[in-house]
Length: 317
Image (cartoon, rainbow, N blue to C red; front, side, top):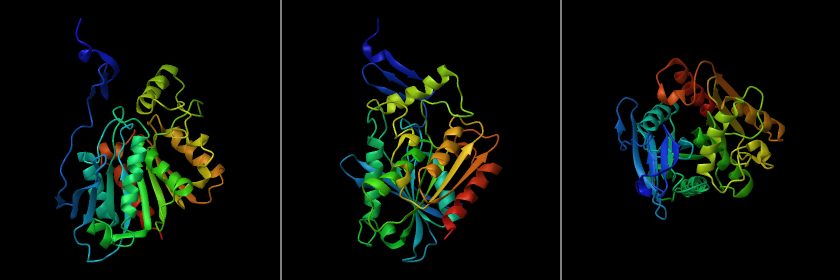
């Protein structure tokens, strides 16, 4: 019999394997690229440690032709990966944010939060809030990072993410609106791409195959072992009594026809309307596409359409 360090505790292939000794083997989402200047989009990026306590870093993006002290809308982005995979430094996010920053003429901050299971939730939420507070520390142009001091317009702040990152963007807006407001920061809107929400109740149009649902729910158990289950308000906003206190005035949601999470995106929009939240929202459903298709096929017609829709959402006064 082999030693316990080679014995599997949980096989989540093709995503990852977890061994009995606690070792985690990630099978995807591990590639990273350094910050750089991208001549195609004319966007420059750099990495900053925003919290030494957990070695928490962010990647900043800025169009190179930005004039001195020119103020731009600020986007804070949270990457996806089921809280288990990925990085703000992944090549797909680098390409996506270069394009978005260029097209929308914005400054962006991409957050590299700690991953489960080594750091179970709420670590990702805590890290994301720490990063947001660091960003907000620049509101009087006296923060540690000159790009934010000189160019961030804190009257036009947007939170965005895909999959688990969209879940985080929602949670940050709830925290801002209900628990711990970011003073002197106007979170104008949140942009949720294929948001990772779930729940025990099978809603209309949702997959009802119990075995497939259970496989998906294991991912949440790994990410958040202390959770009460898939009806935890962190995963199921419909169960959150504070949903109506979402701390922004606009919401943009993107769902995809072939995505397992599609109906949850629509359900989120429905429950948000019913919650008493008084803002404006829009949902776009991309037919024939799957989860996070815009990252895997960034040049396809519908990915380009999504990018243009986000740009319009940001540009709307």
